[in-house]
Amino acid sequence: MTRLSLTTMSMTEVAADALIIGVARRGRSMVVAPGAERLDRALKKRLEDALKAVGATGKAGEVIRMATLGAAKAPAVVAVGLGAAPGRGERYDHEAIRRAAGAAVRELAGTRRVATSLAAVNGDSDPEDVRAVAEGLAIGGYAFRKYRSGASTADHRAAVASAAIVVPDARDTAAKAAVDRATVIADAVTTCRDLVNTPAADLHPADLAAAAEQLCTEVGCTVEVSDEKSLAEGGHGGIVGVGKGAANPPRLVRIGYTGGAAGAPAIHLVGKGITFDSGGLSIKPAAAMEWMKADMGGAAAVLTSIRAVAQLKLPVNVVGWLACAENMPSGSAIRPSDVLTMRGGKTVEVMNTDAEGRLVMADAIVRASEEKPAAIVDIATLTGAALVALGSRVYGVMSNDDELRDEIVEAAERSGERSWPMPLPEELRDSLDSQTADLSNIGDRYGGMLVAAIFLKEFVPDSVPWAHLDVAGPAWNEGDEHDYTPKGGTGVPVRTLVEWLAARAG
Image (cartoon, rainbow, N blue to C red):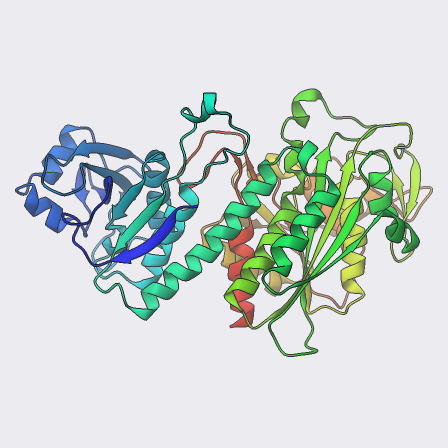
């Protein structure tokens, strides 16, 4: 991960391989954002004209590079577009700054040292602007190179090694706190991405459980792992059933962090940890399996969010549940029409083995409910229907509590992640009726994201506030890289969860 620091050195004097400045659009013209004044003077007030000459327009995410020609210690300057310049009395919003920083540092991959004046684009180096720049730099420079041999490393450049953020006072307590917080959050996002990007052959359910033990115990959390035997004895029919077809048995992981008052009810996070999803006997088409190593993105987000909460020492009690299994076809796999008895006694007729995520999540939600939580939030790459409804960059938030749902949507907005509140229409519940069991694991094909959430709601006590995040779209990026978002695992919704938990703790 890119190392972050603060500096008071001017953009002309700071030692770096490249300088990052902001540019914006004002009407049909391009303007240089605040922060680059010293560099402009060193270039004899020709910076704007020079950038226009090499094609800079200020369009959001645009990255233009040019030589400083000796006007600064750094040999190159990179101008990144911020989009429309704010009007009088307005400011660039934090996400515009974060995305600009991410786009620039991603373009500069392979560079050792960079420095940036982006924290000053609003003229005052506000701590929240510093945090936005720091987050953009740290998560934008991500590179997953674990499996690259020497032959291909040159084509997949390493992340920028270090980045200095130019501020008026590098000793300012608020600015330093902003960078420290950004570093913790970026570490969580990066670790989540690494887990999601790891091939399923190297990340079985037991491996994901082991990662939780290592990463969370080292920051003071407690971790308990239930193996296949204890899961069967405990009546976890969903997790055991989904894992029956795989050579690698399932696990249920409980992570505990106590930062709040002793005995106070904890917030419980439940993550889907399907380390590979073939669809089971209801097997997926080959192309649909290509990114199914990412079907544990919810569990990875829960794991790394709790790790971040512990590192930030937030005054809140949090429990995480990772429902881990492989969904594979074999002679021992569950069949369509099989009936599973879930934790708590409800029975489910499995009409489609590719609707497996809701089965493991239901067991984990019941386990969470047994501890009388303050609230339950579950996170899952649950349905392809979520992509149909909201596209690949927005996740849906469904809840039995409007206030909780709105809290999460607002936290997502503040963190820079994109979510959208979705309903739970009562009329869709009837489509989950089964002639054989208490309910079926699939229902109406229209509104599939909502139907899956309604299935999970059946396992939540009415008295417990609950929200469901279907992150099937933004947790994995199959498209091109953009702003601070790489191909593959993205780390969504880690930033939302940490932001929401921080607000709850506040």
